[in-house]
Length: 482
Image (tube, rainbow, N blue to C red; front, side, top):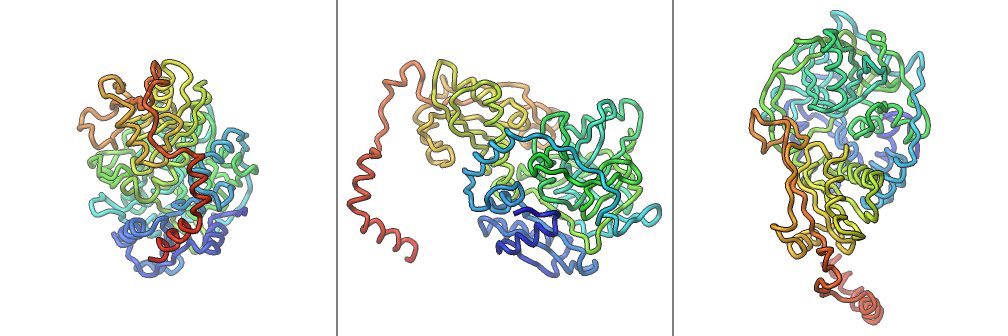
């Protein structure tokens, strides 16, 4: 099922019975608080569309939980909405392996130009930016956004999802973690003592949000990536102030500049780690020069919560596929599964392999923990044998406790890529962390002599399930209807 823009996507999600309308919630803590409560109570949670927000006109809406079910994620990425999460990992990695970048198409007009504000008319508080968490340092307009910049040397366009806090009517702060492409491009301008032109989109096709929050290869624009996924170009207009490409069907977009040394206090903010992991500090600001928006605009949000709640789900599936592909591209053979566990955020990656040679498990662990998709803010990599279901946490713990010995099985990599959001790294030392590489496979040297697993054989299982089908079916019915 194809859709053209966010509104058509919402219509399809509504038809899937996965959209909940909420009227009357306040922007201050109620939208964020209700989102968290619903995400904890319902698995998967519905997409939430907030309207009639006090202090704002009817139709000025906030949409959250866009991608927090596999059905909505599959709809967004052009896959079968009936697939399971594990099937999504397999389908997604095959799709991105075949991906051919498709450049965006420049058009003269689009719905985003239905309303334009410039000069003294600029007021970003015209939109109901929530204060998501109780200890947040301000209202965050950008949590599911696109921050669009152009490399001053190479000319390619980056569109990343970085948090954006409102400072006043025409000023917003942008926090970008070290090593991220948007920060690298911004610093290039600052090193030249030049302002960095920027456009920020606050409501867009969910596929663009997927691309902007994914580890897209350096030098490839997220517009090209999204176009490749959809196999047709994304329509963009040139921003009237910056010339940067802005999605023609965007809901809300602003343009302006970031200047060297122009900083304002930003944060704290409840981040995806589950903590207010970085204190209030000075960050670059955008001086907003223009605003464009559709009639009855929809602000997209993805408020971070603990990794097991909310957006950790879809990112874990995408990251699993990307790390698996990186292992194959690095020449690591016989990888049978990869899982970036949603409850751990980026901190834990589990890899299953069919061991072929001495050091195979260590090789897989190091690559998984240091590739682009797995390198940023990782902590643990566990490698297990192919007979372990890595999507079952109990099986992983069983393998970890019975096939590893700490003295032999754990190695530590030091001075790895971390950042200010890492809660366990103290102030003044943020930027680096360590990685635990855990080999929880049967020791290669004597794997054939390792004690056999005490478990019913497939042959006996099939025989007994056939003989006792009526009993087992009755027990299953009793479990469903206690």
